[in-house]
Image (cartoon, rainbow, N blue to C red):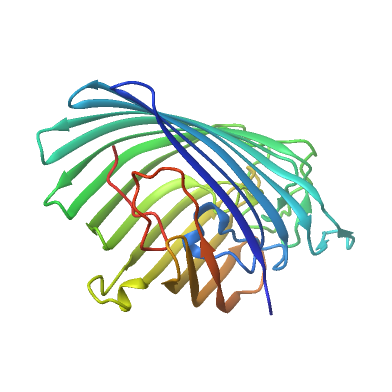
Amino acid sequence: LVRSRGLGDVYKRQALGKSTRLGIRAFSSIQTLNSSRQQDGVLFQIDPANLQRTFTLSNLTFQIQHEITPTTRYIHLFGATMSTTLRDEPSLLADGSRLFHRGLDYVQFNTTGAVVHDFGSKVRGFFDVEYEGIYNNFFLDFTRQVPVRRGDFSQHLVRSNLGSTYIFSDALSATGRIGGAIATVPSLSQPAPPPDPNDPNALDANDRSAIVTPQGTAEILYQKPTFNAELIAGYTFGSVNPRIGFGRTFQVDAVIGGVPFPSDKVLRNVAILGTGTVSRAILRPTNEGDAFLSFIGATALVRYKLTSWLGALGGYSMRYVNFSGTLAAPDLMRHQVFFGLSGFFTTDTTEPPPLSVFAPPRPTG
C-alpha cells in the first residue's frame, strides 16, 4: 500500500524587547490515518471507525515569554486547531445504515499561562493553568456495541499543574508535574438512545456532574548537541483523537535519536530516531458508558542529509490497538515501511541547520 502525506510548517520568533519574546507557529497537513506515525505528535491519530480516512489538520499558535526578573518568567500560549475529513470509509450504524462523512470534524481552542522560576542553577519550578474548549461537528458514540451517530457537541476542560525540573548536569535533567483536571460532560445535539439494561458498563445518561481527575507526569531527559533521549510516564485527562472524545489515560513514551557519528565525514550526515509508546485510556465521551483503548506503537527512522535543507528518510513503524469494554471492535495490528524526502526552509540565519529529523525536547521554561 502506498500512502501519501503533505505538511507545511512555519515558525517565526520575534524579540519584542529586551525581556519579551513572541513566537508564532502555523502548520497544515493533509494525510491518511495509515501514513501518520508516532513522532508526528498531534498528527498521529487512532480511529476505531475506519482505517483509510484522509483528513486535514491545521494549527496556529502564539507564544509570548516575558522576563519578569532575571530568575522569573511568564509564558503564555494561545492556540487553535481545526480538522476536516476529505475522504472517509462509510461507518456502519446501529440501525444497519451506512454513514458517509465529509467536511468539518472539530475545532479546538486552548490557552495556557505558566510562571517559571529558577531556584538557583540546579532547580526550576513552575505553575501552569490551561483552558481547552472543543466543538466536535461529527461524533460517533463508541460506548455501544455498534457506533451511534450523536450529532455534534461542545466540551470545556481546565487543567492545572505544579512542577519542578532538577538539572543534574548540562545534559541530564528530570521533571515532575502534579495537578488536576476538571471537565464538563459533552452536550450532545442528539438525545441519548435508551441504555441496554443488560449492559454492565451503562451509566446514568442524565448525570451532568463535572468530570474531576488528578493528573501527573514524570520525565527524564538526556540531551547533547547531537543526541538526546527522553522517557516520560504520565496519568492525564485528554484524547488521542478529539473525534472520539476525552478520557483518563496512562501512557509511557520513550524517544531516542540524534547523529551517532558526528565526526565522520560521511556518517555525520546520518540521523536516527526511535520512538515507543504504551498507553491505556478509559474513554467516556458521554455519561452513558465507557470504552477502553489500549495502544502499543514503535517507530525506527533513518535520515540522510543530502543538502543543508533536504534529506532522504526511511524507516519502519508498528502499531497495535485494542478496543474493549462496551465497544466490541476487532484488534488492529499494522506494520508499515516508509521512505521519502524531508526538507526545511528558514529565514533565521542565527539558527544552525538541524542535523536531526525532529525538534529536540527541552526542559520547561
